[in-house]
Length: 144
Image 1: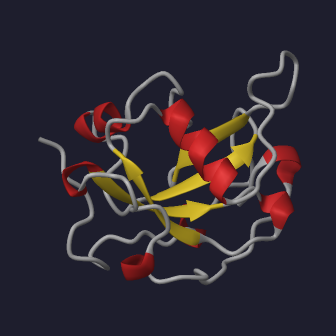
Image 2: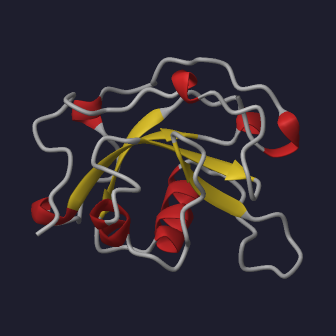
Image 3: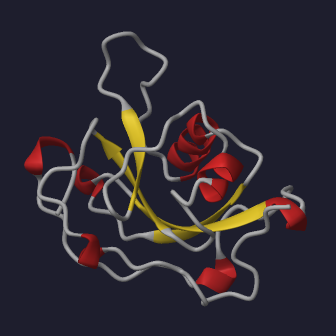
């Protein structure tokens, strides 16, 4: 399982608990969405739990998560390798869609595992290597 270039991804434990997810400050409670984030395989970073807003676009989520994780993001540069966000099953999320739309279309749910990767598709991908956060905190997602 893995991402760009066919690199192998190992099964890793999260570096934080869902209850201590990163990023809830400044996001209204009614907009919070918990994600189990897996960083690009080349970073060798353990996964972390993060909170994002359901109102944000997938593109903004990529920007915020890459900033929080100090991950290089050259998506605004023509010809650069793009950083994309994928579901546990390997589906690439459309950067112009809102997180709320992803939930309403059943592509993503609160607590789901997402993969941030430098690729257009995931290669050698094994969904068993990605742990979701479903049921690990009291409120995984609210979409009204």
